[in-house]
Every structure is written in C-alpha cells, then in structure tokens.
Length: 125
Image 1 (cartoon, rainbow, N blue to C red):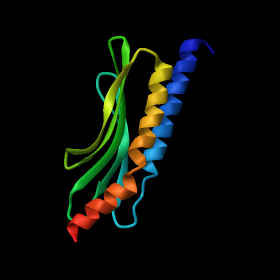
Image 2: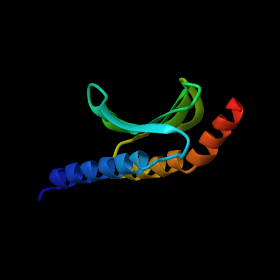
Image 3: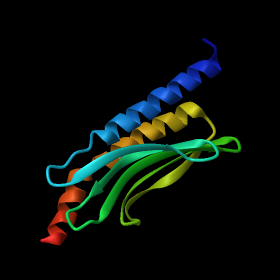
C-alpha cells in the first residue's frame, strides 16, 4: 500500500472512531440521534443530537474539512445554535496531525456531555 492509500485508510479509521465515540453518547432522560454528513465541497461532520424534554436541541459534533493545502478540524457543543463549548478551529498541513486533533476533539466534546445535559435538564425543572 502506498503512502496516499495509507493516509486515506487512516482518515477513514479516524472518522469512524469519532463517529462511534459520538454515537455512543447516551443520557437516560434525553432522546439522542447520531448523525454523519458530508460538508461540501470536501469535508465531513459527525456527532449526536439530543432533544431535551422542552424541545430544545443540543448538538455534540466534530468536523474535518479540506481547503487549499490544509486540513481544518473543529468541534463543539451547541444548544439551539448557541455555543456551549467551542473548540478552536485548527488548520493543519499534515493529514496525520489533523487526525490526531480530530481524535482529541472527539474526546473533548464527549467528556462534558453528562454534565452539560444534566445542567440543561436542571434549567427545565
């Protein structure tokens, strides 16, 4: 396998890991739905949407896009489009570095999930 093929395989593996981590988010009192979608012209976004009992939607997501000579990684948590956690967008020239940041961001977005959802539920009652 040549280096470009190894890089492509690494990209698919990293995206699968991020999707699996975010799809695994659960909360006993909040419905969730995992998602993965393409971001035109060359990117992907993956995460999980939660719908609180009052109808508000909370999104946990990471994304990887390519433009010019760089890979761009972002991640965050939003409630009704308002940021609760916004990780800085990182632009990296190397696919391996971008994949390492994507892995880190998937963990950074999922780590506070229970606390964030519990806090939002407390606001309802």
